[in-house]
Amino acid sequence: MKKMIAVVLTAFLLCGLLSVGLSAADRTFSLVIDGRQVAGSAVVRDGTLYVPLRVVGRAWGGRTSWDEATQTATTVIGGVSISAKRNSFTVLANGRSYYHDGCVEYINGEMNIPMATLYRIMNCPYFAAANGVLYIDRGEQETAPATSYREEDLYWLSRIIEAESRGESMRGKIAVGSVVLNRVRSAEFPNTVYDVIFDTKFGVQFTPVANKTIYNTPCEESVQAARMCLEGESVSRDILYFCNPRLSPNSWASRNRPYAFTIGGHVFYR
Image 1 (cartoon, rainbow, N blue to C red):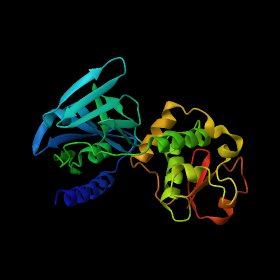
Image 2: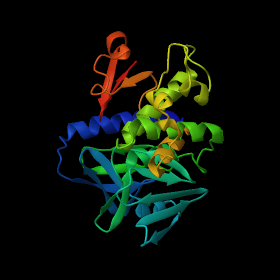
Image 3: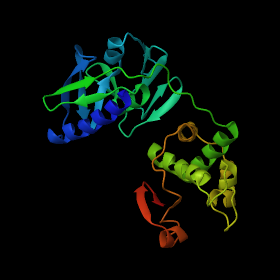
């Protein structure tokens, strides 16, 4: 039942945000958590709804610590440890990374994370009303969901992400990883990360395999992107191809596959 409520309230949230005519300017919402108004406020900034991690954690009996050196706030709620680093696009929950286009923001002396990210971690229903109140209820989640993957998959996925998308945004890196994992799930391609990357059925599939950059050591951001992909992050479950039109202006994918979207220097196809 709570899951159904979460879906409904999320839909209401989107309608509510649209109905109040949001702009790039900040808009604040007072907070009602589990039916009780609390000190603190949520903020809409550049289209992303943020909530103060410490305030929400305190309402749910959590404790928050602050690491000045790394500019990281950590709140422990039950069995879930949530860490948010200033200006990062990821939030950690029990070591698992959650990505969002809106980065962690330090607003009014509080570390704020995207409400959508908190929802994914805690499965907590929420509703932003047109009267300027954000309602949040405690979700069913007591521990962050466990995920497992093979170290071999992380090894090769991080390397193809590094070789194909060095210099791209985190979203661009996750998109490249999504293509590889979508191929693993597709009956049209091999069923392991390694075999997809080194597939030569119709010629070399990825340029880094041919030019040997696949063997370069990946940067930490590429490793993080690979880890998030293996833990379930995905830009799209449909994309199977991508190319850099500057380097491959007449690629096979551009001529034969449906266009999906463009991220940075890459064009993605279904």
